[in-house]
Amino acid sequence: MNNIYDLAHQLKRAIMNSPEYKNYMEKKNVVYSNEKNKNMVEDFRKQALELQMKQISGQKVDEKEIEKLRNLENILRLNPTINEFLLAEYRFSQMVQDITKIIGEALDMYKDINI
View 1: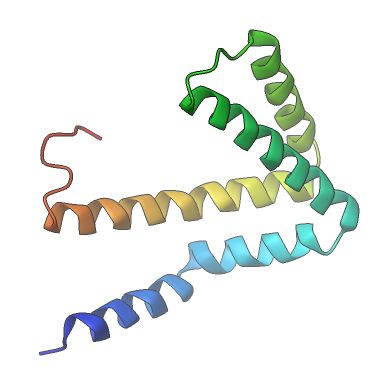
View 2 (view 1 turned 180 degrees about the vertical axis):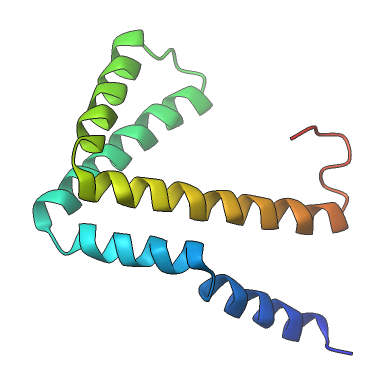
C-alpha cells in the first residue's frame, strides 16, 4: 500500500493534469501575457482583498465601495479574455474547495458545518 505522502503526490499530479487546472493555467497565461489585462485583474484583486480585509476586521464597508467593486468586475467581464480567465479560475477554485472538503471530512473538520 502507498504511504500517505505518495498519495499526496498522486493527488498533486491528478490536480495538475485535470482539465480545470490546465484550462485555468492556459487562460491565466493569456491574461498575464497582456500587461493591460494583467494590471486590470491585479487591481481588481487588490481592491477585492482590501474590501474583504475591512469586513474581516469588523470595519464598516460602505455600500458605495461594494458597488464600485461590482462595477469593476462587470467591466472586466466585458473583456472576453479576462472573462474566460475568471470563469476558468472559478471552476478550478470549486474543484479545490471540493477536494479540501473531502480531505476535511477525513479530519472531521466539517462534522458540524453544513457546506
